[in-house]
Every structure is written in C-alpha cells, then in structure tokens.
Image (cartoon, rainbow, N blue to C red; front, side, top):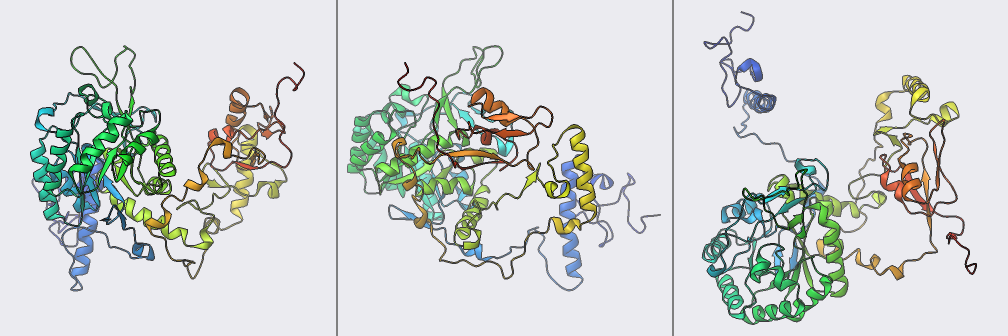
Amino acid sequence: AAMAPVEFDEWGLPRVDSTTMQTSEAWIFCGGDLAGLAQTTVESVNDGKQASWFMHKHLQSLHGLFVPNEPRLPNFFTPVDSVDIRCDMVGLQFDNPFGLASATPTTASPMIRRAFETGWSFAVTKTYSLEKDLVTNVSPRIVRGTTSGHVFGPGQGAFLNIELISEKTAAYWCRSITELKADFPKKIVIASIMCGYDEKDWTELAQMSEKAGADALELNLSCPHGMGERGMGLACGQDVELVRNICKWVRAAVKIPFFAKLTPNVTSIVDIARAAKEGGADGVTATNTVSGLMGVNAGGIAWPNVGKEHKTTYGGVSGNAIRPIALRAVSAIARALPGFFIMATGGIDSADAALQFLYCGASVVQVCSAIHNQDYTLVEDYCMGLKALLYLRSVRELGDWDGQSMPTVRHQKGKKVPPLNDLVGKHLPSFGPYFAEREKVIANYKAKINPADEFEPEKHRPAYQPAKPIEKIKDVLGLALPHIGAYGDLDNTQQAVALIDEEMCINCGKCYMTCNDSGYQAITFDSERHLPRVTDDCTGCTLCVSVCPIIDCIKMVPRTTPYEPRRGIPLGAA
C-alpha cells in the first residue's frame, strides 16, 4: 500500500521495464535490489545510469521536448575542440597522429574497421607473409608484465608476448586492404609485410600489397621471437647490409612510401636506420618490442609456458616499461638523420606520452599495449588531450604549468598545508605527539575560516586567451632535440642541490635512507623530530627527489657555493 499505485509482480517486486527502469507509473523509476533485476553492485549502478537517462527523457517529454532512447552525454564545445591536430607524413594526410601498431589490435580486418569508426587515423595491419611462410601460434602467448608490481588494468606497465605474425594469408590481407580503403578512403592503411632474405619474395609481397591499395608499407625487420629462427624478422633487422638490400629491393618494386620497422635489440639503432635510408626507405618505425623473459615462478617455471613440459622462449616486452628505450631510439635517429620520417611506438599510453615522442622527432605514433589495457575508445582521450596540450602552450599565463598539470600547491598527502610556522612559530612533524598537536592546530585554524574558501581555485575572468597562434603538430616536431646530446655537452659547473620543504614533509625518512645507503650521506635525520636536513655534502644526485612520496616536497635548486668533488685521497698524495 505504501507504494501504490505501482504494480507488483508475483514475487512482490515492482514491475520494471529492464531497459528504461520505469515502473507501471511513468514518473516512478526503480532499480537495483528493489527491482529484483540486478545481481551485483555493478549492475545496480548501471540500473541507476539507465534510469537517470529515462527520467530525463520523461521530464523533457512533459514539455514537448524530444529525447532519443539511446543515452548520450551532451557535448560541450570549448576553444580546445577547435585545435587542429591533423598532420602529414610522406605526402599522406592524417586526421590525427594516432594509429594502431602492427600487433594484436589489428589481428583482423573487422577490428581495424571498428578502430577507424572510433577515430584512429591509421592502422598498420598485422604482419603477413607469403603462403610458404605461414605460421601457427602457440598458447598461452600474451601475458601481463611484472615491471609495475602486482597491478592490473590501465595502470599495468608492460606485457610480454611470444605471438608470431598473422596466421591469415596474404590474400586475406590484400582483400581486406582493398575493402578498408573503399569504405574508409580518408583513413591510412599501412600493410606490414615480412619475408626472408629473398629479393623475389620481398618484390612479390610488396607489389601484391601496393596493388591491393595500401597507402604505405611497413617492412617487419624486427620480430624478436620465432621468426628470427626462420631467417626472418630480427634475423634481417640486426644486420645493416641485409636491411640496406631489402630496402633497395622494395624501393625498386613499389612506388608507394615504405618504412622499415626497427628492433631495439641492436648495438646501434642509428646504424640500422641509416642503412634503411640508404636503401631507399621513406622512414622507419621505432621500435618493435624488447626481447626479454618476464619472470620465473617459485618452481623455476617461466610464464608463459607451453605444454606439459612447460617450455618457454624469450618474448617481446611492450608497454610503457619500454618507453625510455623507444624515446632514446626515436630521438637518436631524429638527431642523426634530420628529415627522415619516424613512426614511433613503444609505451604510448596517453596524449602526454605521444607528445613526448613528437618532441623527440616522430611524425606519428602507433599504439598497442594501452589498448590491451582498455579498448579502442582511448583515441578519444588521446585526441582531446593532445589538443589541450597544444592549446595550453599558447597561453602565456600558464607557462609554469607542466602540460595539463598546474604548479604543485604546498600540500601533504594531497591536502593543502596550513601555514603552521605562522600559526605556532615552529614546524610540527607528522607522527606521535607532534602529529596530535599538529592536528589540533590545524583544526583550530580551520574552525576560523570558511572551508569553501580554502579550496576555492583562483578565478580568472575573463578566461586567459592564447597569446600566439596555437601550434600545429608540425610546429612541435623535434622540439626536444636541441636539448639532447652527448655527455660531454653537459656543464658540470652548473650544480644543483636538494631543498626539502619541512611543511610538506611527512617524516618518513625515505630521503635519509636512500642518501645514506645509496648516495652521498648528505642528509641528517633528527632522532627526536624526524626532520631531514640536507647538508653541504649534497652532490645533487637527485635520489632523494626520486624516492620522496610527496610530490615536490623536495626540489632541486641551484648550488650557491662551488662544488668540490671528494676524491678520497687528495690529488698528488698517492
């Protein structure tokens, strides 16, 4: 009776439309346990999301306004949306610099189709070969990395795979390329191909792919497992002479642009890139996965392992764990071969990471492992993030921001730090009786202020406007290169030392421990108050900054006194 006039079913639960969550009464909605439909918390939350949309639809209908059945959030337009992130490379026009790497995200043609519909501007097919070189994969073969600890999901730092090239035929891929280009003429389709060291094979496969309508080719000279044993992939890509000759064969066979995909598992990736250029390649892809063994369990068995014998092999490590290696490769090639086009891949998991590669000389970027962690819709975040980063570069007043991150306010454990020195005339550590006193002082301080004012962001009206034209992708390519060079280019007369902000310090002692046992014994630790102090012995190694859990609690500042290295034994005394 309390819920009248809502109708109930035979179970004594409200009759609910499982799509709209609407009851027999148009103005009453029901979900979760009460509706008897949801079995988990996740399902209950989804009931609420569904109901909220149809509540909105119902309310709007009372005023004669149409709302579609399919839920969708409104799009808010800002000047950031107008930022142009189109780019071009080897005469090809890209909607944005984000594409799918030749890997599991391009396993089949329907997957590439969905990726294009989501917003990716280009895709490199899974590597395919001639029929005589067809492969059959083992299983299991793709496993999560251990480089970031026991982390699952988007925060996962790496993967390792022992997957080979595509199991599908060249005929399948050539037909797929033709169909994809017919349905998505503005998208870029790059055919990834692999052969042994045979001119006839490379000529045949390259021409077959060009005829199918591929915009460009990527020569897989870098697969780090399996294919090398067949004289393909890595077996070709580690030898400058083989790379140069293969590129010459392909250059003579086709007119479309092509890129040599390089392996990081070499002594000098620049030498390999130079050989590709000398052979006529339009550019390179840097880099493929890094050969590795992800781990061995307590029983001495590696993962992945195959069959009852638990056999394994060295696989390819991917993800942001290899980003430093990929950045090094891209920047080194860009510095050594100006104007040589680079497609970057290796740990691109955000717009910020993509911009780093553009700064280091890449023209476009390829993504794989980040999609493992999520799905194709990542590209929406990447495009908007890149637009925001380019927009922010044009606003003079935000010059002290790091990308989309504003300067760090004085904080402790994410909360703003009150001016304790001004309030009590001394620093209060964050443990024991000092912590209790600290909390009491902070509570009294907050009782006298409006909490809303404490967290009120600084207002700027009218909003800051760009002080210069917003840069395009081509304007930021290679921006970091002038700052990257040989060790001999570094000035050892411009020294820095660590500076600890006592108000932000949580007295954990991490800086003291690392400096004492891994550094230069330049930090003292007060036994009573647990306050770290940087002494004149600081050499500016920056270990303390690297282990401090509080962002910007420790900063590196210019040294004001001459730096005199301690040589152990005075010079000339031996």
